[in-house]
Image (cartoon, rainbow, N blue to C red; front, top):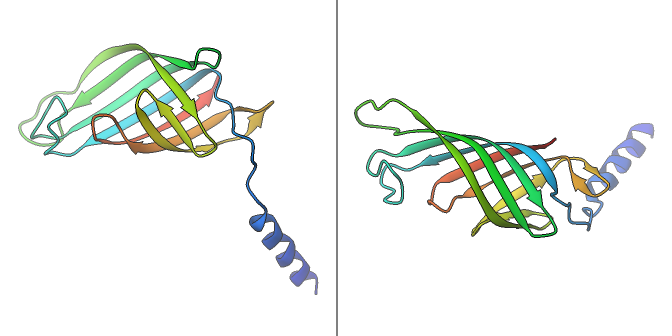
Length: 145
């Protein structure tokens, strides 16, 4: 009988509706952003060779102005073909952003999102993935600072 009660309680927890509150993304987050682009993608630097991009960023989300300032570095290289050494360059840009309970939009790109714990409604972490503006597969992890 005890096992049935525990199973019923667990089922009730999983069947409970998700929180209706949209998490707020605000302030500074450390972000690890990765893209992998197909070999035949004409939108990338190494068209015909594919490309990988690994970005280490500080993202400062300004909720009042709905903008995010990204600073940091990106390391990139082709995926196939003759060896070309990876290169690193800096990133510094500001873009519009918004989010819902299930998405994050940065610039014109909307990603699927899952949020970690909230503190006073502000997400302390998030993971998101989707198709980047360069038509590449992209994923990221963000941790509140």
